[in-house]
Structures are given as C-alpha cells and as structure tokens.
Image (cartoon, rainbow, N blue to C red; front, side, top):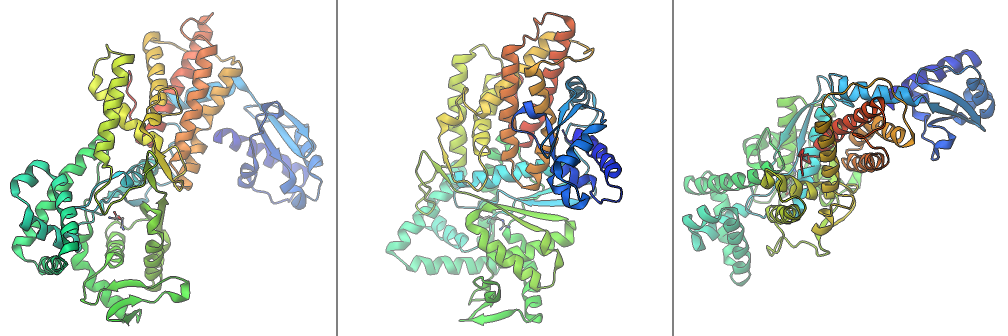
Length: 568
Ligand code: ARG
C-alpha cells in the first residue's frame, strides 16, 4: 500500500494547496496520517483531517469535504466524507494489477529497498560461550540476529555477521584443569562439545568439595594469558571442536558468519583502550580494580581491569567496537543478547561516549526475553539445560513422524522433515514480540493446524502445487471479489510491514504478517476455485493472486530464516 499512500499523499498535497495556499503540510506528514479504517465499509484508506486544522485554520470536516470535492487520484475509486475523515475506496482491479506487476513481473523483489545503499551494518549475534552449553537460551540471539541480518540486507545494507564467541576467560582455566585431571583425547574427539561441557560441569561439582581446584584453574588461565604453548594448544583445540559443532546447528538454520572473531581476538587490542581511558582521566581505582565511575548517569561502575590486571567482558566489548569501527566503518553495529545484559551494554556504550567517540550513537542493543521449555526454566550452572541441537533433533524427529502419516510418498522426506522441524521452532520463537518471555511447547510449534511454521510452509507448498499444475497463464484484467480483494490488500501491505519490522528490530512483525497472509490465502482458496474457475479470465486472475502470494510468502519466510520446500 506504500505506493498508493504516496499517490494519495500527492493528491491530498495538491488539494490542500488549492484549499489553503501557503499552508505547510508535507507529503510525509500526510502519509504518516493515512490510516486503515477498522471496518472496510468506511473505506480502504482514511485521512483524518484533525491534525491539519490548526495549520489550515479550518474545521476538520470542512477540510475533508473540500478535499473530497474534486479528489482525483490514480488507484482510488471514490472519496467520501465522514466527520473529519476523508474516506477513500481503492480501485480494486488496479490494486490487483499493481500487485501482480510488482510481485511477479518486477525485476526487484517486492518490498526490497535501497535505503541502506552504501551503508554497512555489523551484526553481533549467537556468540555462544565455548565450553558452556549452546542451549535454547541462545535461540533468541541466533535467530533474531540472523533474521535482522537478512532484513538489513533486504533493505540494501551491506551486512557483516560476527560471532563474538566467548572464547576467553577463566572458564578455560577450569576446562584445562578438568581435562588434565579427568579427560582424554579420545573422549573429546568422540563426544566433542558434550564431553567439554561434562568436564566443565564436573569441575564445578569437584571444586565445591576441593576449593583449591579454583586456584589451579586461575593459574592455568594466567598461563594461557602468558602464552603457555601447551595450554594455548589445548585452548585452540577446544575452540575448534566447539565451532565445528556450532556449525552443524548453523547449517540447519542456513546461517553463515563472516567472522568468528571471539573475545580472545581483542587481547592485543585492549592495552590501547586502557591507555586511552587513563589519558582521558576516566579510570578510577576501586579496591585495586580499575573502573569507570558512572554514578552521574545512574549506573553502577563499568569494570575495566580486575585487581590482578586482567581484562573483563566490558573491556573486550569496548576494544571490539573500536576495532569494528576502524575496520568496517559501520553505520550501525547491532548486538543481540538476552535482556539480562541490558545494563552491560548501557554501561559500555556510555564509556565510549565519555571517550569522545561520537559514533557510540550507532551502537544498538537489541534485547529479548527468556525462554522456558514446557514451563520449566533453564539452569546453566548445573548443566541441566536443553541443548539447541537436541531441541532441533527432537523437532525434526516429530516432524518426520507427522509427515510419514500425512504424506508417506513424499520424495526427499528427510530434508523436508529438517526444514519443517527446524522451521517450526524458528517460526514459533519469532511469533512473539522479542521482549516477551516464551514458553516453548514443541507440540504447539509443530501443529499443522495452528498458527505455526508448518502451517505457513504448507500454505506455501499449496501455492507451488497449484502453479505447477496450471503451467503458463496470462492475466487479462482483474475483477476481484471480496476474498480476492482482501488477499490483494494484504499482499500490498508487505513493504510497509517490512519497514516497521526493520525500524523496530522486530522480526515477529513479519511472522505475524505471514500468518495473516496465509489466512487470507486459505480463505480465498476455499471460496474461489482456482484451477476449476468458471472462465479462463477468472482462472488467470486467481493464478496471478496465487503467484503473488507464492512470491511474497517465500520472501517473508526467508527473512525470518524459515525454509519453504515446494512439497510437504
Ligand atoms: N557470549 C555472550 C553470552 O553468551 C554473548 C556475547 C554478546 N556479544 C557481545 N559483543 N557482548 O552471554
């Protein structure tokens, strides 16, 4: 509807200039005021004239009726007045024609833009902590992060995905000690990350009885910091094993990172940060530790160096941000993490501001709420967590069982089961606003009849099958009925829906749009026979709407990282 809103705004703009020459209302203000009436008996688009009353020195109903008098706009059939509103009815045939042209015939994807041309966005997401489990708490950062990457690319930005692995810190001391005491090369090679996590968990249990283990772990980490070759080799090995396993999960999600530059990558870049903080008189000593006092900004201090001089999570983030600015000259750097880290980001963004880096304004933290599974919360410390790979495996397994019943003949069933199982999890997760706490119930996510990923994929597959059976067709004019027009209207909303999802960093806006589009398409499909339509003209019109739906659904599903097989 963006294109039509623009045309309406041009017409209104001209109208206002005639009614009140010299009044300064811009086209953008008019666009911002255009609304969708709740009941389409009141029109398809409405312009409330209240906001213009002051500028025009006229009562809103007067403005509306003056505008209505000679209202001419390509794509609008009629203009009526109701109180202070100018109610517009869309030319249905033109809308359908426009949708067909811009979704099927156009050479650029419908809704894509060049807003970000020449601009770079760095996205920091997923970023698991090596040696700790990659669990369902990471689902948020992984899928919101990747959806945002796709969305920014769709808006024309050059996007760089960075996995800021937690590959540095005292946990490596613990892991080294645990490995040396209880581990073996064979076990790690065989069981990979699970063995590392098991060793890490064992360390914690044993250390409760024998606190001296903690001193050993600290010493091992210090040795790593000083480049001890044996520990460094172990550390590198732990990381390589972990990355190889993360990549299996990423592959199921079609995620690829441009960089796996974890926290350790910034080790040699931190002294300069500490120096700069000192020079700018921002560092204070606090019980031996170095901090930046943020009391004046209502926040606790930002910790830069521990008493033993080792760096901390915020120090590494500051160094990483400066490095990324210097290397990529980003226009935006986006961090997707759980809402539990809001303070951390607010603190070090402030430190960069105090350091005089005015681009701190381009740093964006995108938080999200907690996840529980079947009502129970996660407990990372005890290792009592659901791993992301296990969640996906279970979803794939369940999807395969459902499909074996529904469509036992389907070719390539294994791949399709993966797409449906993983897609179900992602879709379910991205259905709610990101700040909402989510309770995961796999059965609900996989319900083919609910508002789920499989339902959307099924609708997409339905459009593919119809188009496949129909073969070549050529629409010759449109005469849409109510169901067809409702579908066309929803299709036309895709670009502006995408715009608000991008502006709010909220992929769920796209997910909910997909559900609306599927509902409209399925109602249309139910009420309007496509392949057996009464006339050829009607058949072509319905095929055109089917193909537009097919294109928009595929695009929208891609943006939220859900695959769309042609057959289910
Ligand atoms: N590894 C961290 C965690 O799992 C997330 C890192 C987020 N990115 C960052 N630049 N701090 O909590």
